[in-house]
Image (cartoon, rainbow, N blue to C red; front, side, top):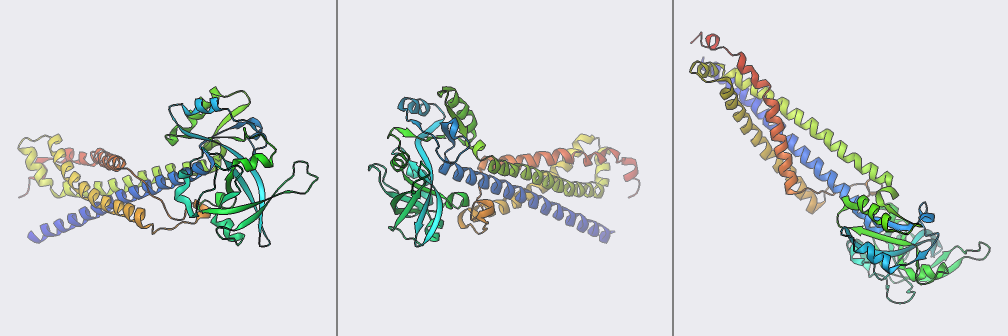
Length: 401
């Protein structure tokens, strides 16, 4: 009889250990999935926004073009009106023009982005790898900021001069030619940006397009919180003249934002699967505990305990098992988070994911909510298998000594 009880105890102990491991794996997988999903979403949103603006205010004629086909007058009153909106953080004027860089017998098609004095270079400071930013205060400065990819392809070095060619408006004359000096190099890790974007003084674009100094291609607007972009774009549109439009970045790069929106669906699937795995294993462990202690249940019932009280006893034991699993799961999940955050040991293909290493992001509140959600759902679902207590009859389980 003693050997039988020992074997039973060993069986239940193994099942409880399996359930604990299942909970730990489930919680750690959820934390890893949520942190990597949010990290990748935020990083792609950040890079897309900081190099293109979160909201673009421009003429309707420029809607479907990457370059500034038509110009409009830089209205200081309109700019101040937009800047004074409660959700707007900053605004600056821009002008875009396609062109070609030539150096060492190499050609590279690029997109020149002219920015004005109110452009904040600090917004892209983390991407600067060499040199300094172009001078914007000096009239028609010939300094440019290019990417490491363009620098390498053209065989250039910091401080070198490079020839640039632009299409002549008449279409019959030779291309317009300018000589620029490379004063800074950046690397965003975003191939679409690094392969084409070149920063320079907006006055260079104005001269090339034969514009007046108060003519621009558009405004780039940034808001305090990314989730306010669409709402702010609508508010700005209501204040604009009839010829201007405000375009949120989600509309300009809809394919990218639809792609990263799928991450939330994938995380939801992982969340459901991991909770089901954890609950199924916990349900098995709970059933084994109840059946193993059926004599104890019979004694408690014979002494007058009701079913609800006995269920609470077993659910409390299940809570202890789940809590142990949560502890180890959080240890593994947060260990991955901090190691990836500081060491970046998981690398990604930038052509596919637009980043070189897997970014992670999760808040303490989200960790607490995920744990409470996992715990509450598990206990609610475990109430179902605990109903077997109702079927245990004291007269049957206490019949034999």
